[in-house]
Image 1 (cartoon, one colour):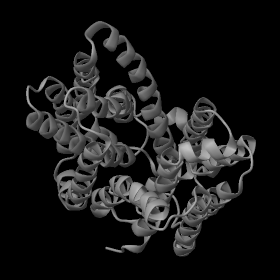
Image 2: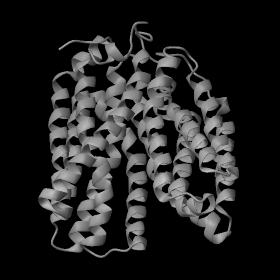
Image 3: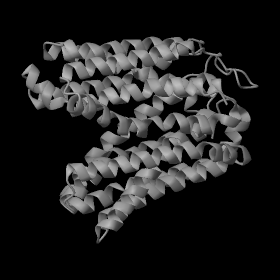
Amino acid sequence: MKWYPVTALALLSVTDAIAGTALTVLAPDITRALGVSAGAFASLLAVQLVAAAVAPVLVASVVGGRAIRAVVAITTGFVWSVCIAAMGFVGSMWMLGALILLNGLANGSISALHTPLLTDLYPKEQRGRVLALYGAGGPAASVLGPLAVAGLTGWLGLDWRVVFFVIGAVAIAACVVAMRLRDPGVGAREETGPGSPDDSFRTLFRIPTVRRMLAGFAVFGMMLLPGATFMAIHLEQRWGLQAGERGLFMTAYALGAVVVLLTLGRKLDGLFQSDPRKVVKLCAAIVATSAGGIALGAAAPFLALCLAAFFLAMMATALIVPVVALVGLSVATPAQRGHFAAVFTVTLAGGGLLGAGLLMLAEKIFGGSGAIAAVAVPGVLAACVIISAVRTIRADLGRGVPAHD
């Protein structure tokens, strides 16, 4: 297997995630230096989230079925890398806001282009492995991000402005490494070719398996984002774990997730090649396991069981994205894969917003621990929705074109 394409794209994704971590960790230093309130800074981050949610749809629409994905991914990579480096030179909230907005729009290419490009760069027999390897970049970044900020500010004593310049320089270097990437063409690995020129967002939703997987993932998002936040709150309020102790727990999870994802890929490929319905069943089981882990951890009578349950839930969560992506990208036509990747990101964000509202309601009704258990309910519902794709995936894979129920 060729390692360069997946490594190059993973480096782009990891450096972007590290920059996002730096924005969060260094928020007190930034607000103090610029003389802005925490609320004003939070509003800038909210704008970035909105831009990052909308941008993948725009990027997928602009690129369409043209073989320019590698060029766009690298070009936009340089844009957000320069934005990160330039954050070290801002003198006002407005300048910072403009850079954050541009950064959010530019890194939409990560969600819209990276995984569809990987599916065309590698044969079908290696896609599960490749998506798992690429997915390992997320947990890796959650370890490297805080370490990078701590090392630059604590060990080297650098100012927050220098930190952004250094991270931006590293991101630019990652873009240079990726410059040898080439787009082989949409559907280059498919016997049926790229699909119909009319393949679009509208025709994407004619595929039953896509509808089921995205609907299930949206419901899962209602548990994922709020659940991750309130697991940390539960560990502090119920068990008295301080920031350092919670940080060690999160680091252990991230390292474990990297190991699991690096070893999962080959088995995922074999499972999908033998019977794709098994991968759908695996996805539903993973979602249910994650939900069960959160509920068990919330109700656990002693700390060891709570930590074990939360660890299991978080490990399961790390596996869900590459599995859902493998199923969705396989049943979509090559021309639709960029659209699927974009909708995939928006679906998760939308589910997270709904989940936040559900969590607020659950807190009022059940209180802290009960709220976390209540948020796990969407995970069970998501598993039920996803498992229904067992009935449609073989037919959708066989057609190779948009299907109807």
